[in-house]
Every structure is written in structure tokens, then in C-alpha cells.
Image (cartoon, rainbow, N blue to C red; front, side):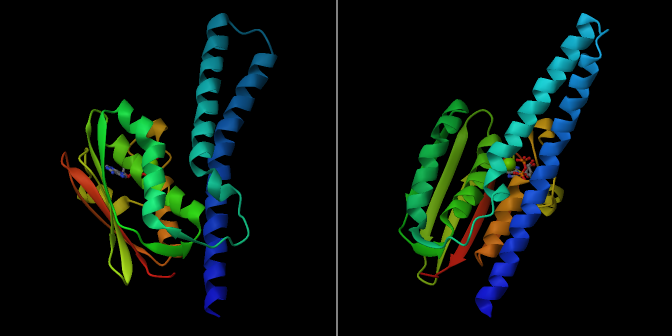
Length: 226
Ligand code: ADP
Ligand code: MG
């Protein structure tokens, strides 16, 4: 019975995210199609043409941003449980984001203890990637990203913190709300929503503390399932 319940929840998570993503991608495609159609009708000044082309390119970039960040969810796969070491995954994640961190002159500090959990490795990676990417984006000109994994026997505690712009009380309260973003056209407001859904699905918890202009800390825990 228990596994049945978990599966139902999971399908709901996946289908919800997939529909958010297809909606988000369809909008820019519709805009581009409209512009192409207008251009086909001819009789446009060079300025108008250039304007339409510029908007089209930026809309395609936007669709690409959404697909790149959230594609994982658009392809629901059969159940794929694996045993993996949380610290090994975070070490991979560190390598993956190093170039991005370098561009913002961010130092990454890690303290990793081994802890094995059972879950979907790909979703786990996506979850942590979404959180860490936000931390990097919160430090546009230098800072420290700290990643700590503590083995607490009955659970694992993952602490991710940045020395970035921080969040107001109001912003913290809105974290995980679909499409909540402070990044305008560069944001989707889907990253934290996805992360929170994955954490819930894996029976984990997340606490956020943040101070404006000081930084933000995420503490994510998962029970010992291995
Ligand atoms: P996006 O990154 O596309 O804006 P997310 O769902 O990933 O969407 O994040 C939503 C919002 O939460 C961000 O726009 C930002 O305002 C806030 N946020 C998330 N993580 C951090 C962080 N580490 N520091 C400051 N703000 C953050
Ligand atoms: Mg994000």
C-alpha cells in the first residue's frame, strides 16, 4: 500500500511539472510563429523586420532556458530507484557548476561525509542543481558557496549556503510558488518548485534561512532509506 501511495504522488509531481513546462515553452513558440507569419506577409520596413527578428531570437532563447533547466521532468520514466552516496553526487555537482561559479568569482567550499540513500539519482541531482544555481545567481560578483553533507545516522543533512543578496521575509514565504521569480525574463520561477517537489517525494525536509545582503542557507534532510 505504501509504495502505491508514493507512486501516485510521484506521477502527480511529474505530470504537474511536465504541464508547467509545456505551457512555458508553448508561449514563446506562439510568439515566434506570429512574428514569422507577419514577416511572410511582406511589406515590412527593415526596422520592423529587425525588431521582429530580435524578439524572435530572444523568445527562442527563453524556450531553450526552460527546456535546459527542466527537461528532466518532461520525460517521465519508469521508476528508477538506485542506491547512491549523497556526497558523491554533490562532488559531481561541484564539478558541474565550477565554470559557472568561476565566472562570478565564487569560491566553493565543501565538507562531505559519506551517506547512502535510495532514490532517483537524476531527480536528486536536478533538485540540488536548482538550489545551487540560485545560490550562484545570488552572488553576481564574488562570494562563497558552501556545501556540507553530514552523516547523522538516522538521516543525512545537506547544508547549502551562499553569501549573496539574500531574501526578504516576503520572498522567503513565496519560495516554491509557481512562477515566483525576481529575475524577470531570466527567471522561470520553476526551479524551487521542482526542488521542493522532489524533496517531498523523497520524504525529505527543507529549511530556509536568509538575511538580505548577507546570504541564504538551505538545510535539506533525507531519512536513512538504504
Ligand atoms: P528562478 O531562479 O528562475 O527565478 P527559482 O524557482 O529557482 O526561479 O527561484 C525563485 C526565486 O527565489 C528567485 O527568483 C529568487 O528571488 C529566490 N531565491 C532562490 N534562491 C535564492 C538564493 N540562494 N538567494 C537569493 N534568492 C533566492
Ligand atoms: Mg532558479
